Length: 136
Image (tube, rainbow, N blue to C red):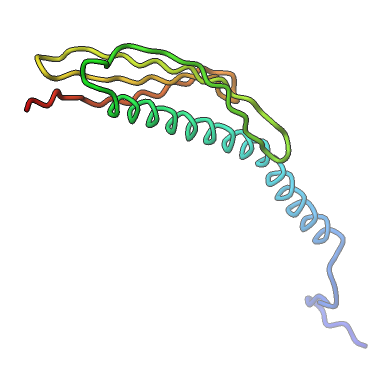
Protein backbone atom coordinates (compact mmCIF):
# COMPACT_ATOMS: atom_id res chain seq x y z
CA UNK A 1 0.00 0.00 0.00
CA UNK A 2 1.32 3.35 -0.96
CA UNK A 3 1.28 6.19 1.63
CA UNK A 4 0.03 9.52 0.40
CA UNK A 5 2.06 12.47 1.58
CA UNK A 6 0.23 14.74 4.10
CA UNK A 7 -2.57 12.23 4.79
CA UNK A 8 -2.88 10.05 7.88
CA UNK A 9 -4.31 6.59 8.05
CA UNK A 10 -7.56 6.42 10.07
CA UNK A 11 -7.41 2.72 10.80
CA UNK A 12 -7.51 3.12 14.63
CA UNK A 13 -7.04 5.31 17.69
CA UNK A 14 -3.67 6.56 18.73
CA UNK A 15 -2.39 6.18 22.28
CA UNK A 16 -2.88 9.91 22.94
CA UNK A 17 -6.54 9.79 21.87
CA UNK A 18 -7.16 6.75 24.07
CA UNK A 19 -5.56 8.47 27.09
CA UNK A 20 -7.65 11.62 26.59
CA UNK A 21 -10.87 9.61 26.28
CA UNK A 22 -9.98 7.64 29.42
CA UNK A 23 -9.24 10.83 31.37
CA UNK A 24 -12.58 12.38 30.35
CA UNK A 25 -14.43 9.19 31.28
CA UNK A 26 -12.71 8.89 34.68
CA UNK A 27 -13.36 12.57 35.46
CA UNK A 28 -17.07 12.06 34.79
CA UNK A 29 -17.15 8.96 37.02
CA UNK A 30 -15.38 10.78 39.89
CA UNK A 31 -17.85 13.69 39.67
CA UNK A 32 -20.84 11.34 39.70
CA UNK A 33 -19.52 9.35 42.67
CA UNK A 34 -18.93 12.63 44.53
CA UNK A 35 -22.62 13.51 44.19
CA UNK A 36 -23.84 10.51 46.22
CA UNK A 37 -22.96 11.85 49.72
CA UNK A 38 -24.50 15.22 48.90
CA UNK A 39 -27.69 13.63 47.62
CA UNK A 40 -27.94 11.37 50.70
CA UNK A 41 -27.56 14.41 52.95
CA UNK A 42 -30.23 16.29 50.96
CA UNK A 43 -32.65 13.36 51.26
CA UNK A 44 -32.12 13.20 55.03
CA UNK A 45 -32.66 16.95 55.31
CA UNK A 46 -35.85 16.75 53.24
CA UNK A 47 -37.13 13.87 55.39
CA UNK A 48 -36.57 15.92 58.54
CA UNK A 49 -38.35 18.93 57.04
CA UNK A 50 -41.29 16.78 55.91
CA UNK A 51 -41.63 15.19 59.35
CA UNK A 52 -41.47 18.62 61.02
CA UNK A 53 -44.16 19.91 58.66
CA UNK A 54 -46.39 16.96 59.49
CA UNK A 55 -45.87 17.50 63.23
CA UNK A 56 -46.68 21.22 62.93
CA UNK A 57 -49.84 20.44 60.96
CA UNK A 58 -50.78 17.89 63.62
CA UNK A 59 -50.37 20.48 66.39
CA UNK A 60 -52.46 23.00 64.44
CA UNK A 61 -55.22 20.45 63.90
CA UNK A 62 -55.16 19.57 67.61
CA UNK A 63 -55.55 23.27 68.40
CA UNK A 64 -58.45 23.58 65.97
CA UNK A 65 -60.17 20.62 67.61
CA UNK A 66 -59.88 22.15 71.10
CA UNK A 67 -62.51 24.28 72.74
CA UNK A 68 -61.70 28.00 72.39
CA UNK A 69 -61.36 28.46 76.16
CA UNK A 70 -59.07 25.41 76.45
CA UNK A 71 -56.44 26.78 74.05
CA UNK A 72 -53.21 27.28 75.97
CA UNK A 73 -49.45 27.13 75.50
CA UNK A 74 -47.98 23.65 75.41
CA UNK A 75 -44.82 21.83 74.36
CA UNK A 76 -43.84 18.28 73.48
CA UNK A 77 -40.85 16.25 72.34
CA UNK A 78 -41.06 13.59 69.63
CA UNK A 79 -38.40 11.00 68.77
CA UNK A 80 -39.03 9.70 65.27
CA UNK A 81 -36.98 7.10 63.42
CA UNK A 82 -36.23 7.22 59.70
CA UNK A 83 -34.20 4.84 57.57
CA UNK A 84 -31.87 5.80 54.71
CA UNK A 85 -30.35 3.01 52.63
CA UNK A 86 -30.85 0.59 55.49
CA UNK A 87 -29.22 2.89 58.05
CA UNK A 88 -31.58 3.86 60.89
CA UNK A 89 -31.54 7.47 62.07
CA UNK A 90 -33.51 8.95 64.97
CA UNK A 91 -34.49 12.62 64.90
CA UNK A 92 -35.69 14.47 68.00
CA UNK A 93 -38.29 17.16 67.32
CA UNK A 94 -39.21 19.77 69.91
CA UNK A 95 -42.68 21.22 69.50
CA UNK A 96 -43.83 24.46 71.09
CA UNK A 97 -47.35 25.88 70.74
CA UNK A 98 -47.81 29.51 71.72
CA UNK A 99 -51.34 30.91 72.07
CA UNK A 100 -51.89 34.67 72.31
CA UNK A 101 -55.08 36.67 72.59
CA UNK A 102 -55.24 39.04 69.60
CA UNK A 103 -58.54 40.63 70.59
CA UNK A 104 -61.76 39.57 72.21
CA UNK A 105 -62.90 36.33 70.63
CA UNK A 106 -59.74 35.82 68.53
CA UNK A 107 -56.57 33.91 69.44
CA UNK A 108 -53.40 33.41 67.43
CA UNK A 109 -51.82 29.95 67.54
CA UNK A 110 -48.13 29.72 66.57
CA UNK A 111 -46.48 26.30 66.28
CA UNK A 112 -42.67 26.07 66.27
CA UNK A 113 -40.87 22.82 65.57
CA UNK A 114 -37.09 22.61 65.91
CA UNK A 115 -34.72 19.73 65.27
CA UNK A 116 -31.08 19.00 64.56
CA UNK A 117 -30.48 18.55 60.83
CA UNK A 118 -28.12 16.00 59.24
CA UNK A 119 -25.50 18.73 58.93
CA UNK A 120 -25.74 19.30 62.72
CA UNK A 121 -27.35 22.73 62.36
CA UNK A 122 -30.53 23.52 64.25
CA UNK A 123 -33.53 23.76 61.97
CA UNK A 124 -36.79 25.49 62.80
CA UNK A 125 -40.22 25.46 61.19
CA UNK A 126 -43.03 27.81 62.15
CA UNK A 127 -46.73 27.67 61.28
CA UNK A 128 -49.48 29.99 62.40
CA UNK A 129 -53.26 29.98 62.47
CA UNK A 130 -56.09 31.81 64.21
CA UNK A 131 -58.94 30.51 66.31
CA UNK A 132 -62.16 32.43 66.78
CA UNK A 133 -64.77 32.05 69.47
CA UNK A 134 -68.12 31.29 67.96
CA UNK A 135 -70.98 33.14 69.56
CA UNK A 136 -74.47 31.59 69.41
